[in-house]
Image 1 (cartoon, rainbow, N blue to C red):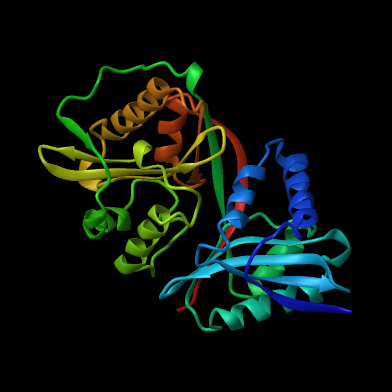
Image 2 (cartoon, rainbow, N blue to C red; image 1 turned 135 degrees about the vertical axis):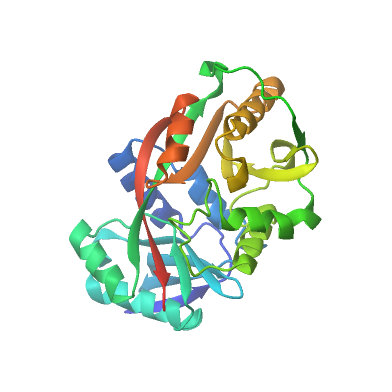
Length: 308
């Protein structure tokens, strides 16, 4: 008998589902995402994440993990085992989840790959729930191979992230330079308060353990012009958000803040890799990353729902 159960804690009973997803991801992309997936589950008890498990005679065969802010829902993880990857199972778990996070919630971002469905079938199913397909690229930098290729930028000051500056930082984020909250992924329809909440979520560990020692605010002549937030990515640092105010574009500040960040990691010798996700449509930032030695290793489909 197949039924849904609410998931409020994780005690290892989902290892089979996680292993199946990670194996499929590696087979397709030749990249291990296990640490990032484990991050989603290990802080389930302490975060605001919730979820549902699809059970067949008590055995987990499907799962969805999400969290809800005041006007945004974020789906962190979704997977159905091959045998159960059918339209009825997909609709059952999605309809139940959307009812739980309010069927008319206008803004939902789906940040995970969907396996065991063909591309056309996946797009058709997601379109039935008003989701639009986007793409994001995962970039990787080996710290040992990094070589600075510009002179240091004059006039920039790097400071630790201050929680009370989130409101001001959100104004920069709303017209963001790069990072996980680009307008290509979080499109028009998101408000400033939404971005404030997402910055708070990063600092509060919703996307992995926040690394304050590898995060910074960027100032030019005492004016806050940018920000960089990092979380633990296992053997590397995950550059979760890096932002630069539009009025500071074209001045080399983006290169300078990433160079400072990479040098900081190299000096401390605690981590040896940097990963970051960027919208596939963000050519400006993709060029910046590639010029600094980052290599694109994965292009992942994501989905966004904005109801008018």
